[in-house]
Every structure is written in C-alpha cells, then in structure tokens.
Length: 206
Image 1: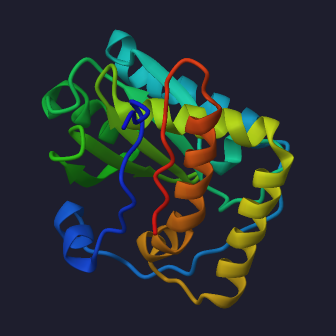
Image 2: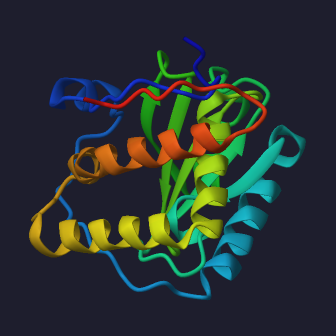
C-alpha cells in the first residue's frame, strides 16, 4: 500500500522517552493558551534576526512554524522556530553561538533526525534544530499551510487547545502535546490524502 513520504505512525512518547530527551530537569509550568495575536509574526522577525546574527551562514533556514505562525489560531504564547543547519548532530557548530545569544539547549534526540531543542525568553521561544531535508521540518510546514487554508481544521484544533488548557491541568507541555496528538494525526491524514503528487492509502490510527 502506498504511503505518503512524510507519513509517520501515530505515536505518543511515554515519560521515560520524554525524560531521556531532556538535557535539563523539567520545571512544572502551567500550559496556557491565548487568543491569536497579530503581533506574533513581528515577534518572530525579531527572533529570526537574533538567530541569524548569532549563526551567520550556519543558519541555512529559519522558519516560523507552530500555532503562532497561523493567523487566527489560538496558541501558547511561545514562538516556534524551525532552524536548519548543515548538520544538527554537530553541536559545536551552533550550540555555543545560540547559547551566547540567549537560547538554552533543553533537548537532544539523536534518534529523531538528530533533533536539538532550545528555549529562549524575552520573547518566549522554542527553537527546533534539524539538518537539511528533515522530514519533521517538511511536516511542520505542511501542517502550517494546511491550517492557514482550512478553516474547519483550524477551528477544531484551536478549540481542542483551549479545552485542554482550561480543563487539562497540564504542567508539562509534552503531556499537553500527547493530548493533541490524535487530532494532529487525523489532520495529517487529510493533508496526505489531498496531496496530488503522492499516493497515500488511509492509515487511521485505530
């Protein structure tokens, strides 16, 4: 059966997997979701300039992804950045410069496309670092584009996020992400089914 090249099986990391990826101990923080802010793209531009200044040509691509990149979508007030460097496993090439610019290395996942994860403040920002051709980078951008053009899925996703933040009592964003994972997977299935360039047989999560 054909599957889309960006398809991934439904997965929710358990606490052991989450802890293994973390570089620093987790500090419980209540997950908050807020109304869309038209200033978020401007905030991203400032973050992009900061990263570009820190890394120079090592920063191959700096993309605004995640919910704050989708106009009209409720979101955590945190800017998500997808950063592409020549080799995300080569930490000396980018970690010291990013940390000097105020971004703290928080996560390392060698088995997940050599993903590295940074947190920054003022503004609050997540920086996800991958190498060129990363499947996850492509997935994030497809998801962003789909939500921009499909109001029904954008509304459903926003409603779920609001519900989880109001009633879920989440103090670990990874547990919050797991609670969203089912709907996200279902939306990806619609994205893949609609892609005329690649055949994709439905893969319901069951």
